[in-house]
Length: 106
Ligand code: SF4
Ligand code: F3S
Image: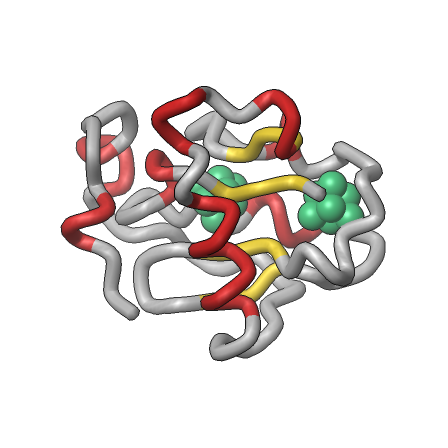
């Protein structure tokens, strides 16, 4: 499966959802997740993310492994998103800021 990681938080560009053939992205207030049971491993979303926040599970950096469970858990709670929407006005300022998990709105 593919996994959305820390740098999506507060950036939430949503370009990724437009290309997903199986609509497996789920939307929270300031983060998206991928449903691991629906993702077909096509990898199309990876180059679409301006924040480079999406990784194949096997390619996850070690400090992002906790996002496997976060994607699975929150995908079960959050609604599907399949159309791009405007990103937060300050998205560019948050792009690259480390350890944004503390800001995740669940
Ligand atoms: Fe969707 Fe493909 Fe990305 Fe999985 S890898 S979330 S199926 S676009
Ligand atoms: Fe997040 Fe990148 Fe999609 S910032 S919403 S994973 S395009």
